[in-house]
Length: 290
Image (cartoon, rainbow, N blue to C red; front, side):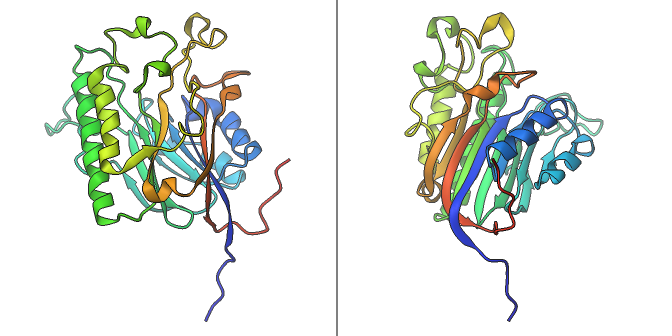
C-alpha cells in the first residue's frame, strides 16, 4: 500500500473578493493571498477571457487557478493551494441574458464557478447580476438568477445533506437596512428592494446560512469610487459567504478586511474571510508567512 501526503487537522482559510479586474490588480491580489495566509480565494469580476488570466503570477505564489471568463466583463475564478477538483462552470438552470447569438440562443454570462477544495469542501464563486434599475430587464433576470441558484443548491443538498457547501461572492444585495450607509439614498433602487431581499433570505430554506454575520455583525464590503464614499464610510455590505450546515459547523472565525480598500489602485470591494477547522492537505513544506 502506498503512502499518501500527510494530513493535518488545522485551520483552512477561505476568502471571497470582487477584485474588479484581475489583470489590473494581480500583484495586489497575489500579495494579499500570501500576507493573509489564504488557502482558497473565490474571485469575481476578473474581467478577462480564460486565456488572458495571469495564471503564472498565481502559480509562482503557490496557487492553482480555475477561471470562467468570456470577455472584459464579469468573470469568476477560484485560486487554491489545497487542491481543486470537480470544477463546474455555471449551475443547472442558470438563466441567460444578452443579445442572441447567430444561432438564436441567448448566451450564459460568466457569473458562477464551483470547485471542490481541501477535504471535500464545495465552494461557488458567484457574481450575482446587478439588476441595474427596478424597471430594467436586468432586474427580473437578477431575481430569476437567484431563484434558480437557490433551487440548484437545494437539489444538491437534498442529495448530499452532509456536504460542506459555501456560496460566496458578490451578491449585489444588501439584505438589511444596516447594510447600507443611508436607506433614504437607496429608496426605489436595486440592492435593497423587497423582492431582492426575499430572494436572498430564501436561501435559508435551501439549507444555507450567513456564516460571517454572527461573527462580524456590522461592516461594509463595498465603497464606490465616487464622491469620497470610502473616506466617509458610505458603503454597502453586499459580499457574503452562505454555508450549508456542514460548512457552518467548521467555521471558527471570520473577518471583513476593510483596510484592503486603502492604498494604491484598490478594488472597490474588500475580501471577506472565513476560517475553518478542517482537514487540509498542506504539509510542513508550506512556506512561513511573516
